[in-house]
Length: 396
Image (tube, rainbow, N blue to C red):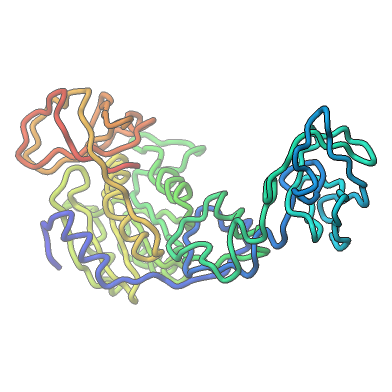
């Protein structure tokens, strides 16, 4: 086990041996936000026939040459077509077909005149000339059969799902997302809603991280154990039977009850690294058991939240084939009063390239995280950060 490594080395050691978990077919209704695992080609032309984009009359453009209010073209109306009707009666010279938006265009016509340019009569009087292919949506105008609809790696938003549905598809082959086990620890922690004895605190990490995982679209299985290494080892073993990744909080520092130093060997896990050169969350630990990753984070609430973004999200991306955390740059609108001997990440609000920092940056504080949308990076060895300083940010 290596100790005291950089964030970049930690991410590389975790993700290099991993590969996406494969693909699964999901109904479109359950595919929102998922990532396509394979290219999708069109099974048909869209639209699958020539159609009208408006209510009017399908006709031959030559029959409207020179038409105006004073000298309208007068055409026999031979049929009426609604969206969903099959058009099989040809339009001949001197004829027109009453047609509604989306309806299939009949053979023989080459344009549609808007009903506003007619008297809506039968025969119909047309008051304006129409050009060939005017108001005429051609078969395959959106996409052609066998053309590439969506590329592998595309994130399925509402528009993408609409495109798949327009092609008659009911499922999407998407990257399988890992199921995440979440184990919180500590004798001092009691569940919200239960009596809180003196010296105890209500646990927030389980709700915090499970909610963040849900925001990102991942399912979780949760458990809590006290500071008993054997009980923690057994809980990890049980969670890893059904989960692809295990995240734990608490018990990773150097105190008498930092029990993961005992629990992981009891489990038989291979410890890869301990302690990452960053603040908060320095004592983060990474292990592997049965080929499955175990990421152990600090129990301090903000430290757990920050190192989740910095370490767990790259793990989730490596296992799912989806995009990992996104970085940007911004300018501080709020000073940070402390020097940063170690590489530091502070919570902030990011908007249009500007970063506002809240009050309160202790790793145990959670309330100042509310409303924050980024982690601002302050390099190791940097002095207090002044307004106007340009920094890198991890977007939340």
